[in-house]
Image (cartoon, rainbow, N blue to C red):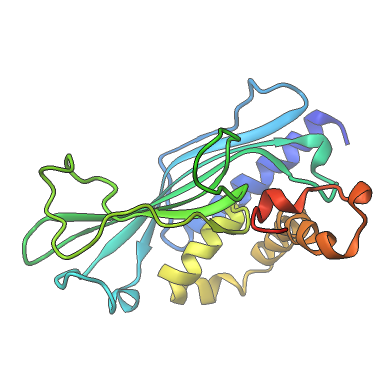
Length: 235
């Protein structure tokens, strides 16, 4: 498959999935396929993808007083085409950021909660960074620290937790299953959706899991993807 035909196929995957999502009340503000990337790379950026949160999932929300919420997603993806068919890291850059937003009906204040699944950029830090990690921020849109009322909460960086890589298809499916489970139950009956999910699980999650399995089953000089990048705690 040529670079051009590969990129065309991936664009179709993205647009097909966004079209499927539109049937479930999910919309987005902008989409950029990064046509300026070299022939060796493909990618896209999506801004303002919004998922309505179903009321049944708000039963554990605090403080009290929320009858509606939404998840706003920003996704940035770049991948090396030559690695797409290998059992190697499929991405050169990946950022999947979710912002949960709700207005409290008792106080009329807007509250936020944010988490991201990112690919670490390789910069040296004091903290351990699994290559793909999940981390959350409690007050993503808060005022400066000396002005924000934290109440009884403790604001501190939590550990970066190992996590599957998540792009549009796998990441939004993850959010829907948690925050819109009734819609997700309908979505999984769509054969086109199932085919897309299986394809991207094969291309994205299979190499990730294979890297971890190979740490115990494959000689060092035969491993494709270094498991210690994904799990820095391995000894």
